[in-house]
Image (cartoon, rainbow, N blue to C red; front, side):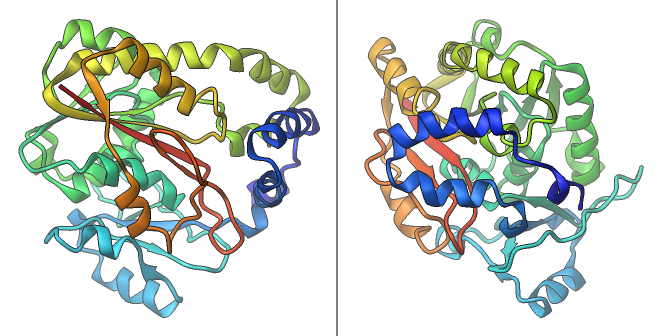
Length: 324
């Protein structure tokens, strides 16, 4: 209930009003209504296949939840299982217990879109460059068994949370394929050139949902002033990811912001300056998931999920690049 009691930060809302009215036009009005009303937010339940939560699936069906992403995952025998409910509300979370695997992970369903776009195959070398708090790393392991999964998080307290998440969801029989790094992601390409088949760059961004509920004006003002520095950092992370990719490999870049400067403009900058990558068309994925998410139109080089009535997931921007 704590989240529902938080108040919208007027300073951030005024800032978003100015930026997003210009970028989204009339669409911003409906998006703003969802973002500023946590009571109508939807949450999804990603099952932990390692825990065999059969009873949980029955409970979810009974409560009106349905399996998401069927069209995308139908070709996989050991598929990612995520359940969603059209009604707002949050399924209760499970606490971490040493030596005991959790049955499920609570998340915004759109946060799995980068994992679906990356399409990891068994045996591939995978890097999750900005991995904390760990939901996407867990999702990657639900959908495939990579040869190795390197989970990187430079901030110490976030790295501890990442390790705890992995311990809560991954059995000891699979822990040996996971390595945890605490490196500045911008340096990984230099240290690990042409190593990975797949790289996920879920970049630090101006997380719109979180920022709208900044706890004080000083914190909000700091976030707004620092926002202009984020595209440069995101671009450097992408350049590092490209260096770390094996030729023929692919990366997915994602954020949870509506910001054009942090989304399509970053990809434009990379495509202009890096001649060894090309964009991958994700329109088929958008078509397959159009009944799950509300996608913005005319987004160059990627997909943008907009919070919408009855589909209050997002925001989530996803773009995919392949190394030549």
